[in-house]
Image 1 (cartoon, helix red, strand yellow):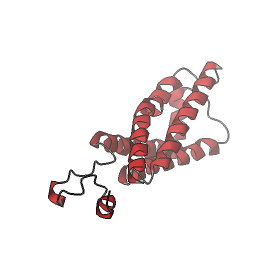
Image 2 (cartoon, rainbow, N blue to C red; image 1 turned 90 degrees about the vertical axis):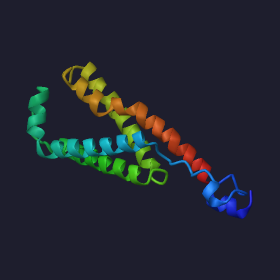
Image 3 (tube, helix red, strand yellow; image 1 turned 180 degrees about the vertical axis):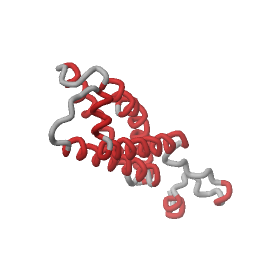
Image 4 (tube, rainbow, N blue to C red; image 1 turned 30 degrees about the vertical axis):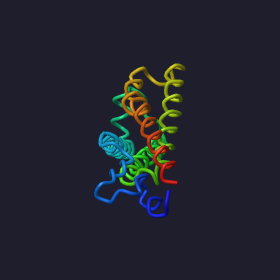
Length: 156
């Protein structure tokens, strides 16, 4: 491959620019939409954990602890992950490690939550929250991560 084709990223160096196939985007439209949705969902969920923790405890039937700092700190992290998903949607290949962190956070937090449900420290009403907020995203995040890793390998 000559220098010009290497710089343009095309494997069609002899074709003039208008006839070269366009570079494939790092994300399909549904992937970008999912990252934007997950980002917005996490920002809103995080804000609700920071501001409306009383209602969350009531909804789940869990007694409110004396110190609510822990749930508010978790809310801050959830909201920051939401911002991270928006950053990945805007610049996917360069920021794919943020998505990897989100994938592992959702995986490990889901496992920890289910463990506490199994120990009966959390009510079964918490299971749908975990499924909607974390587990549902895992297969899609995995697919997106594989795609972004492939795109990163192609560009290097």
